[in-house]
Image (cartoon, rainbow, N blue to C red; front, side):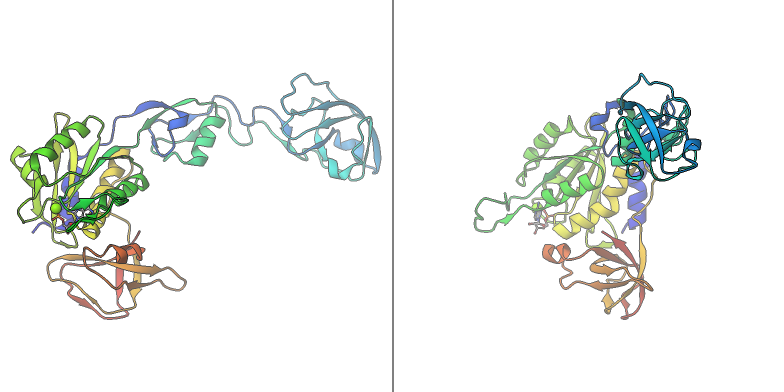
Length: 398
Ligand code: AMP
Ligand code: MG
């Protein structure tokens, strides 16, 4: 059997980072920056007031209370300002430019709030409540590096330096397809021998959380020809395809029957539990990567986390690597088959001084409710068949 690490290495050797493209800021959330972004101007672009109050010359307030004539009002957005000199005040709002000649802003709370004349009760030091030009960013400074994931704050600074379009690696477009003659759509009644189709919903959400854009294709029955037709129809909009079901050792395995003869998808046994039957390769003229995951929901989920998520990271242009693990102490005795790496569903409690992890009841690969109650996977190595309570283990937080 092939090892988990070998299978992941083969996948990562095939998938490529998506080509950069320029997109509008509105669509950039969750993409990965493919250029260094510099600011064309200093930020703030001009000295401005950090508070609502009065622009003054600090030296005028050596003796307080002091009374000063108010020469004008300036609001945020005003551009025509009267220069000031000693013995004057300008009523000023947050974000408004500081008039020439002023060297401090007195918050309105320290004054009587006057409009023609103002009485100031407290002295200020020079520079008080003034946001200096360039204090955040100097003109020409790089504000975001290539490879940054664009989240809310990154969108903020991109807009803040005036960018409308930006060069990014896009979210991979991923088609999710389910196969199985027994599958009924949730929301429709169950016929005899049927189960509700769950994998596509689970995998679609996993794709989105992994930074992809997902297209959930309808489930297809166990007819290889129908499967191929449906796959071909979906390929036009796919950077990757994920299927579930139809890859095991039985009869009626449409994914395997349809794709194996094309010679570009390899079906093999990977030494893991759950999720032993795996397939990976490329399809179509554009050689779109395809992950053919096993149908059992827990197997499909674990396979996604181990193989698809790292591949999507690479496609997004992020650093490669297996899922991150943490160390924890198991609260129960664990068993695992010899020669296979186990991923046991568990509840991880991260704590000081140490984290603990408790396997959930129901470790079958069909036990989706148990999976839904877990927040972590305990990794038990291939050569370990049992672990006592209190053993230190590797855990993948979900
Ligand atoms: P297969 O890999 O097609 O042999 O399926 C293995 C098991 O997973 C069977 O019990 C299927 O009924 C179940 N299964 C396959 N696909 C799905 C799906 N999309 N949603 C829920 N269960 C599924
Ligand atoms: Mg099936």
